[in-house]
Amino acid sequence: MPSFMMSSLGGTDKSVLSKYLTLPQGSKTQCMYIWIDGTGEFLRAKTKTVDEVPKSPKELPIWNFDGSSTYQAEGSNSDVYLYPRALYEDPFRGGPNKLVLCDTYKYNKKPTDTNRRHTCADVMEKSKEQEPWFGIEQEYTLLDIDGHPLGWPKNGFPGPQGPYYCGVGADKVNGRDIVEAHYRACLFAGINISGTNAEVMPAQWEYQVGPCEGIAMGDQLWMSRFLLHRVSEDFGVVASLDPKPMEGDWNGAGAHTNFSTLDMRLAGGLKAIEEAIEKLSHHHVRHIKAYDPKEGKDNERRLTGAHETSSIHDFSAGVANRGCSIRIPRNVVEDGCGYLEDRRPSSNCDPYSVTEVIVRTTILNE
Image (cartoon, rainbow, N blue to C red; front, side, top):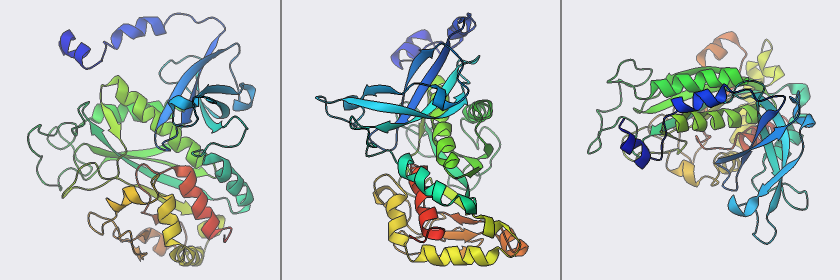
C-alpha cells in the first residue's frame, strides 16, 4: 500500500515497530490494564510499569482512570478505580509483559453500572458445588475502516449465502490472516480457545472459548475480545460485534452459550438437562434482557425466527434444531448426558450477565 494511503487511513508500517520491541527493558514489566467501559460493549486499556513480574493479579496495585471520558463518571468527580482480576501473557509486547483484566469501581468503591463481574463472581461462588461449565461461540464480522464488510464489493453485494460457511478459497472467505493471528495470540495469552471457523455470511467468523468454569468464562471471553480488536487494529481492519451488521437476507451474529452442570455431565444427565430447560422456559423475558447490552433491543434485529434463529418473543427447545431458543445436540441425546446450547445471546452480550442469569435460573432457582 502506498505510504500516502497508509497516512490517510491513520495507519503505520508495523514492521518498523519490531526493532523497538527487541530492545532490552531491564527489570521492568509493562502491564496493560484492560476494562469494560460505560457502554457495556467496548474495552479500554492503558499501561503501567511495575518493578517485578506479577505472578497473580493480587500482586498488582489498584489503579484509576478518567471515567468522564469512558461514560462512567462525571467530570467533577471523574476518578474510577481499576481492580486487577485476571492475568494473561502479552502477545504484542512479548517478554515478561502482561495483560491485566480489571473490573471498575466508583469513587465510593461501589461497582460501576457496567461492572457485571461483581455479581457474577458472587453467583459462581454460590454454585461452585455444581461446577458450572460454559463454552461460548463468539461470532463477529470483519469490516473495512469505512464500515463496509471486508472483501465485499463497494457498490454491490457478494453472491447469496451458501458457499461461505467453513469455506476455503479467495472467493469464499475474507480475512483469514486476521483469524489466524488472533487464534495464535489467544493461545499465547493463555485463553482456552477451542476452535474457529468461517461463518454463513462472507466476512463473518466465529471462534469458541471454553470449556471454562464459573467466572473464568466471562474473564476469558472479554480478554479474547480485546485480543480480537487489538489484532484487527494491526491489520487496519475493524472487528464488529454488531448482532445484525447487514440488513436483509444475511445471517446475524450471536454468542451461542453452551452450559452444563456436574449433574448434566454424569451418566443419566439428560434428565438434569431437561429440568434446566424447563426452568429456562419460565424466565424467557428475563434472559432476553440479560442477553444483550441494550436489554433485548439489539437482539430484536437478530432473533427474527429466520437465519437460524428463534423468535425473540417465544421460548422453544429441540434436539439438533438451530431454530430453537435452546438446542440439545444430537450426540447428547445419544449419550444420555452432556450439555445444552442457549442460542439467544447476541454477539455483543456481556458474558458475565449471560452466565450469571443461566446459573441463577438453573442452579440457584432464583
